[in-house]
Length: 409
Image (cartoon, rainbow, N blue to C red; front, side):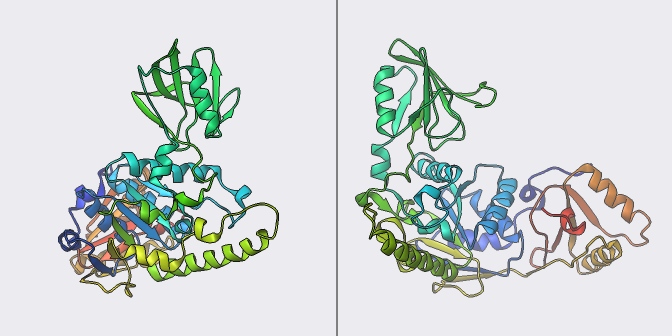
């Protein structure tokens, strides 16, 4: 049976993480990390993050790269990772927002206010939209706990003031319903809605529940109800997400120059859209209130500690850490090629590791290699990563079954 264990505890730490941890003890430090291919970046990062007592923000070029990384780092760390997506589908097409994404964005702001040292993953496009300021968010957040005394009528008035919609049954964020002494409300920063049971004017219990089965999930003692933070853009209160971050946040970026270009491009497009709509009767806020441009972004970045995972860094770096990793041979179900690879790796002193998605896959590999004359020296592990690699620095060759069998991950 495959060994099911968090990868890091199984292999030990990559060598490069010691140098990274030492370098990150300095404030506002700029570090270059180069030579990492495939999922080796997630392995290195998770090794640093799991012992860190600071918030971390990872910035990727695009949504796809960010999503793959979220998948990898969640598997490696086994703790919560918060994804910060873009909310508009197009600049100034406010009707074309994605409700699920607004929810994720609000959740990140809420976590930055209440959770110590969250791990956030985002990408260029999502950084272009400004967010509501801490002060404004606090002003529009309803905080409740069990045994609080508040009338249902007063609470309903507060929800209506925050543009929550009254419905028969809540099914999405921004809705509430009242039946007898029970209030259901779906906050914009939580995966599940809350059910509050009242005894007269006292909150007797608070639970999260499943919208499909209506069954309780968890009991809560204290909750925050957050409105749609993207809906009412007030001039005074918009800030970039970087301004929202605690000052000790460590920022990991794969391509700052590219992100800067995307932010400038979005800002210019927003400006063009604004010129068109500003001629109409509807009052719109100018782009500078809603979007961050590239220069603003790089200026704000300057005051953080930054790890650039790039051969050409945007900032002048104080520390350069290089790891020697290379991509895997494309196997495409050619098992003779794989055997040859494993044999060569063994001769070079590398440990062969095949990540399997199931015990059946491990049995399949054992059957394939059964009649091989040489000792291939491989180990199967029940684990999933997006992309394998050969790591000469740490003497490991990590294969993924989906790459070997040429399947979509």
